[in-house]
Amino acid sequence: MDPDALDKAFMALADPVRRGIVARLSRGEATVNELAEPFAITKQAVSKHIQVLERAGLVTRSREAQRRPVHLDAAALEELTAWIDQYRLIAERRFRLLDELLAETGPDPAGIPSKEEEELQ
Image 1 (spheres, one colour):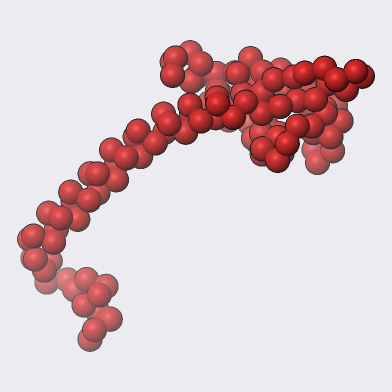
Image 2 (cartoon, rainbow, N blue to C red):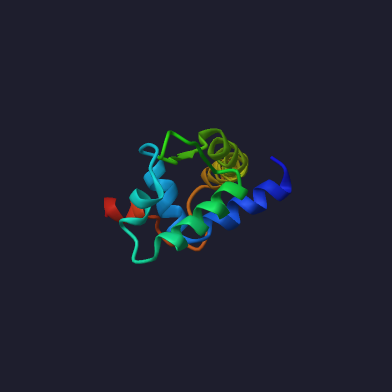
């Protein structure tokens, strides 16, 4: 993912209202009025939050006669998830290697029993 797009997406998601909007849109499209319902802010403020999400590429708007529903861009979220997953997988691999190393070294050299050893006593 493009670093600028990644920065915009994470900055957009840093705000709890925008995360709430994304969570609501994950269940389906909604209008600004529908998105504003759970928040104690003006519809104009919700519109500004939607604009931030649009600039970040996370949502789009369409026009259906008088309605202008907002849609979540699932592909953009998938790109963010893929970016995060690459680092999660690296961390998991390192923890597995650490687990293997600790298993090879045997009991704690300081003589402190593990939780499993304590439960057996």
